[in-house]
View 1 (spheres, rainbow, N blue to C red):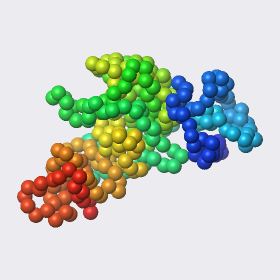
View 2: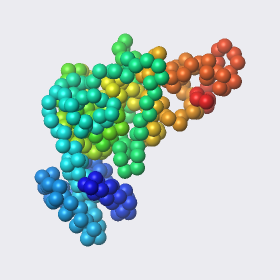
View 3: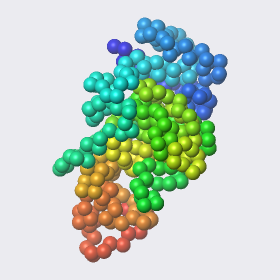
View 4: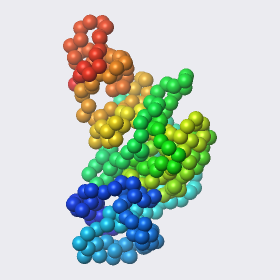
Amino acid sequence: MFRVFLIVIFLFCFCIPSFANTNLNSTQDTLLTTSSPTEAKQYKSIESTNEEQLSALIDSLFQMDVLPLGLINEIKLAIARLNNTNTSHSKTSDSVEFPSSEFYSCWEIDKLFPPQDMLKMKGDTSIILTLNEKGFDDYFHPFNGSVTSDFGWRDSAQHNGVDIHLNRGDKIAAAFDGKVRFARNANGYGNVVIIRHYNGLETVYAHLSKIKVKPGQVVIAGQVIGLGGSTGISTAPHLHFEVRFKGAPLNPKYLISFPEQKLLCNALVIKNTRWGLTAFPKDGKIYTIEKGDTLFGIAKHFGTSTKSIKEINGFTSGWVKLKAGQKINVMQ
């Protein structure tokens, strides 16, 4: 029954017109809050409320003409805390009370990443993840900055994420709702936060100057989880941002448009191929050629073959010339 209140809160957050024009950078606790410092101090007491007190507070919202967004978000955090009691700091847990327990067998806090077990599977191992359901797992861009380094080979080594330019002290936000699995200094990553999300993904935020969350803490999309910095192996302040599934790194640009700061799709196909793990939009049948693309690279990205792409598009020659901006079919 208590989850009903969570639905009520989300209805308030997404349906009340007074929330339409908000300043997304007004408090240190969440990038979604518009509270004044006085209101923020007042709402802080919500953290210690029990279920009965929180229920009474939610009932009182119906008597208010205008609902402060800061109050709503603090209530959301309190609800998440009460609905997720598995905050143990032990190395592993047999409990299923952690995000995406259908994909992960345990909850590790001492290891950076779980075993990449999906890479060991044989045959068709496609898995579909729902990235963005209305009122749940809404995406929030971690930081509004330019991408200075992409995913892939860099200086003869694999770069498992993207680097985003920022200044020391800039606020970094959680990309999705989830639970902090790892939050401390870790060698080359420096101060790093890893969040496991309810959609099956884990996101990594590295080189932070300060960590603002703890392992086991429930967070919501847009909540500040750390401050930008240059700790670890880093030559200048930036955010190293990774997206992983079951320990294996995915190119964040498979699912996020960094220029537009939004998701590219609502559902993502993750597939183990002969070249390793790849990801693409569930309904993504059309691909727009970018500069430097090759037919082999496109086939590898979508877990298919050059022969299949040629057949679908009626390409008859052995070598196909691709032009930037050209659209081709990649799936039947």
